[in-house]
Amino acid sequence: MTTEFRRYLFPEGHPRIQEVKGLDAYEYRLAARAKGSFTGNLIEGWTPLYLQPFHGVTEAGTLREGLHPFQPAQPGEEAPVAAMVEAAESLLGDLALEDREKLLYPVDAVQWQTWANPEFMQFDTGLRLEFQPPQVRAKVLELVKTSLSPEGYELAHGMMLINGFLGETVGLESILNEFSYNFAIYGTPHPTNPWGWQLYGHHCAVNCLVVDGRMTLGPVFFGAEPNEIDEGPHQGLRAFDRRIDLATELMAALPAELRGAATLYKQIVDPAMPEGRVHPGDERHLAGAFQDNRVIPFEGIRVADMESEAQNLVFAILDEFISPLPSGPRAARLRELREHLDETWFSWIGGSAPGDVFYYRIQSPLIIVELDHHCGVFLDYNSPKRFHVHTVMRTPHGNDYGRSWVRQWQQAHSQPVA
Image (cartoon, rainbow, N blue to C red):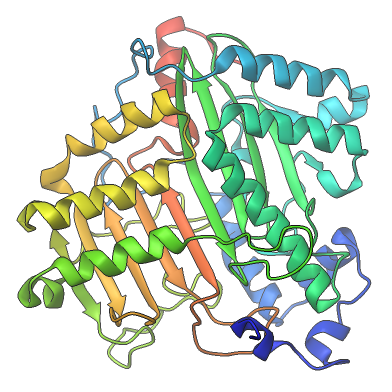
């Protein structure tokens, strides 16, 4: 049986593929900036947002104090910092001085905010992995693997593998491959001082920070077109099934009145939507790249108004999104999220029957998670499909990139940290 996405492959020689075929990441970076082009317009719109001073996503425009108090990790909730430091130092030891300098930034550098999920490289932050020797790429992956949970590493690396599979499938291996990603380290790897790393590129962006045993991940972007590999050495790899299935179960568990109240728009592209609600690149996502200071109001229904079965499904979805955290930080994060049940909201766009395409958002003062089905980019379709999925996770009120924790740590120690 032919996998569904293969029905939408562009024909041989189609301009969508042919015009960028053979370009490398830097050549494509220049081509993507062409004024008036789809990618050029995206870059033009995003660039001023990156230049804004960071304060964080909020639901009403005002930062709430005290939402991210910094305390050292509780026993049993520690991040694997010692192993992370060892992996980071091993990576740094393999680099020439010039590459070390390109890889390293201050822990509170604005370059954290350069991450993006499209296939074109808007900002060349850190090292571009596809141009690094195999041992450097392997040590980057080892640092990522050491930092994340096993399922988190499998998901992040899976996005990279699917990206490579897409490149092979459509004949664009030079701009879509397993290592068409940038990697940077912020701060100096240390057992207690704040530091972290950033991996980003097409359909995969992870920002990880640790300080005094605590870990935060965010922003995190995972996506896939298609969301599976149907042939080759990684055949059978799939992504996002649980995030999709849990959400469909949640909508089915809601009584009709609450389901209707949660549904902002009945169609995923709805005539009732105001102008601008569907972004050319982000589509229905509100918390994507360069949206570090966006005001995203609570919408839909309060989770506290749901029956316990539906509430449990909400927290199962949240647990799925935070699953890249190692077990200790994951337990701490879930505990914190449950403490804000009364301020947790759920909203939906599109149909909710099995097989429907949709968007949903779960939002509280401590977290925003979104899932959206998207239109074609390297496959030929102009309405959202189930096999093209984007997901986003953010930490509102100033702790994306661990920024709130870093500032508190710096104040407590009365000094900036390199």
